[in-house]
Amino acid sequence: MTGFGPPRYLTALILKAFTGWLATAVAYHAVLRPHHLCWGATQAEAEASMPGDSLVPAPFVVSTRAVSIHAAPGSIWPWLVQMGDGRGGLYSYDFLDRTFGILSGPSVNRILPGFQQLRAGDVIPLGRGPDWPVAALDHEHHMVLEPVPARVSWCFALDPDTNGTRLVSRVRIRIYPRTVLWVLAPLIDLAWFIMERRMLLGIRQRAERLETTKAREQR
Image (cartoon, rainbow, N blue to C red; front, side, top):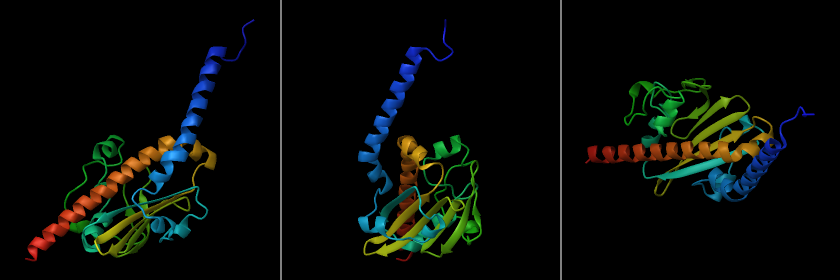
């Protein structure tokens, strides 16, 4: 008599795939995840409190990523406040953002004067997915977004130093069961890391170009 469950070979295949994925997750958490979550950031930056941290208490995941930019905050800030669909874009991999409907056009390489008046309470629009409400904003210091109220916060902070400015990005997440985030981390974190890293580098490239232009105009 044939049983009602899946064939034994299929059960074994599923079990093998699940076991393999768990092994991948364990290796990812042990080796790559610490680097991905703190890419570019110093230990002091990773451990420091940042604006917006209180929006998501007891997060399941926290990332702190950073880049050094040879430019003053005034050359970085305009790119942050004009982000969004139909605005400046996201400065990441445009072909992916456009493929998934997050953006309807490419990220720009110029300052858009019409989108420089961002304030707390405004919204950074996206195509698909939730827009990003602006929870807090301090001109040329920090911008805090709250993509999912009390569940996801994202802070961009500008910290001047002797070589220019540190652009520090802090994301705090408390969505889905913690176990689900742990198991899916190799998939979710990798995509998140690749896109955000490219965004930070894209902002750096544009800000340093703007700083160079300003210096030439002042000569």
